[in-house]
Image 1 (cartoon, rainbow, N blue to C red):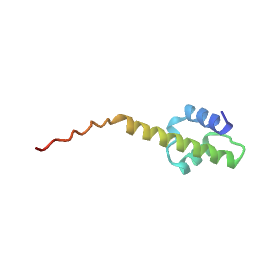
Image 2 (cartoon, rainbow, N blue to C red):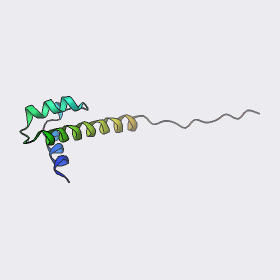
Image 3 (cartoon, rainbow, N blue to C red):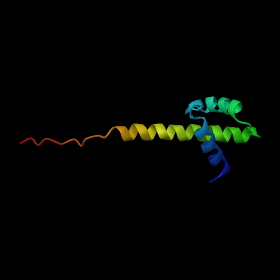
Length: 76
């Protein structure tokens, strides 16, 4: 597991309420919550968290609604 992913998951696990699917908000939250030595790493982590939360939201929406197959009526 690479450094960005490992740190992102650890921070998200400890402070899930502080993050959303919005990259800019995540950057601001990271600036206040964690001491990250470089701007580049902070931005990578913010992006990874935003992407992970977007994917979770998409999976929940897709998994929650199951479509029933549409039966075609035969006209004679």
